[in-house]
Structures are given as structure tokens and as C-alpha cells.
Amino acid sequence: MTVSAETRRTRSQTKWSLLTVALCLLSLLIGRYTARPGSPSKPYEKKAQRSDKTVAKDLEVVTPYGPAITHSQGGYPPELIRRARKILNGDGVRVWDMSRDRPSRKLYHVSVVGGMEGTFLERDGTYVQVDSGSELIAINEILTEYRFTRQDFDSPQSVHLFLSKIIALQSGPIGLIPASNFGLKTIGPLADWLYGTEKDEAVLRKLFQDPQFVFDDDVWTVVFNVLRPNGAVDRWTVIGEHSPQTSTNAIWTMRRVRIKPPGTFSYPLIG
Image 1: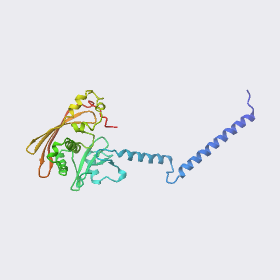
Image 2: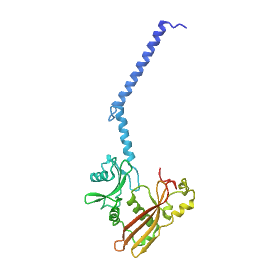
Image 3: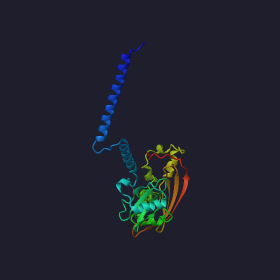
Image 4: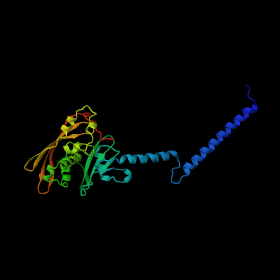
């Protein structure tokens, strides 16, 4: 079929008309976007702004110690950051304030890019790493403000909270769970923990037997199991001393032994 010159000319004009309309609409859309009050003038700036907000939101991770302190909140004590970067050998600092119930001593948990992390106690204008070679000195300084009477040793709930505090001071807010009958009531359906290599509920229940404190005068020893987020189980042996005068306790030694490998249990409390 032969197309006349007039028809070709009409089609060409139609194409140019449509293209012109499209360009006009695009200009109007760009003008509305950049003219909004308070909005960035370039699309990539808007994208970057959303990304910053997302990062700030991601940093506000809720832990047993509250949300992480973000850089945008201006909550980084400069000396803490300097010490943490030096000791942990990294940047990209994330900080949790762990001192809500210890008003006279500031306590922070810090992590850096690469996975290194540590807990730091404020002392004489600087910060001492709690979970270091001298960890017991710092931990015991904190425990001087934690009242735990001789009668509390007979309370399953009080014992569970006391052991939770000890392992948190030593390891930070990483989701370790001290096993006890009271703790068994707080972890949800047991079936949700049995998607690892261990399928027997009786094995899990046995691990959650109540810890028993053995006293020799005011010196006590306790052995208890701790579940880890990677599905492993550690057995902790802690020796400490109770002060009847102040109703406080000091830790002498802490020893941990792996009794179940990673992947033994699932960990439904994540996500």
C-alpha cells in the first residue's frame, strides 16, 4: 500500500505534538516537586534525606536497656566514644545507655563496625571497660548499688533477675537468657525453640532447672545454664560474697563452659 506524502506529513506532525505535550507535563511535574516548601531542589537530595531518616530509625534498636543512642540525638559522651574506638579498634559506633537504674554511675554498651563490642563504666571522668580483664572490679562497683538481700536468694523471680543482671554486665545486651523455672515461663511456647538439632522438649526443660545457691557462711556458689541467640548453651559457675550489712553482693569469679553447640536450639525471640 502506498502512503501519500500528505499522510506522512500528518503522522510526523502528530508525533512531534505528542512529544511536546509529554515534555510540558514532565516540566510541570518537576516544577511542582522542586517548588514544595521545605523540600530539596534535587531528587537525589530527597533520596539521601530519606536514607538518613532510615538509618536513624534503624539505630533505635530496642533492647532490655532501651533504644540505642543515635548520633542525631547528640547523646554520645565524647570521652566514651574516644575510649571505645581505641579499645574496640573500630568506628561506626552504636551506643546503648544501660544506666537507667544506676543514677550515680553511667554505664554504656558500645558496638563498632566489625562486630566488636564492650560495656563501659564511667569512672573519674573517663570510661573503664567492664567486660575486660579487670571486669570484676567494674562489675562489683555497679553491684554495690544493687540491693539483693539474703531472703532474695529464696525467691525464684528475684534470683532470675539477679542472674540476668550479672550476665548482662559481663556480656552486654545480646539476648542471653539465664535458665530457671521462672525463666521458662517467659520464653513463649517451647515448641518454637525446637527447630534446631535438638527436638526433645524434655532436654530443654532439664536445662531450665532452678539454679541453687550453695552458701559457705556469706560466700556463695551458683551454677546455671545460659541460652544464647545462636542456639548454643553455656554453663556458668559464679562465686560471690553476700554482705549482710549492706545487702549487696560482690563477684569473686565467673567461669563459662560451652555444653551445647550453636544450632542446638532455635531462638524465636529474635524478629
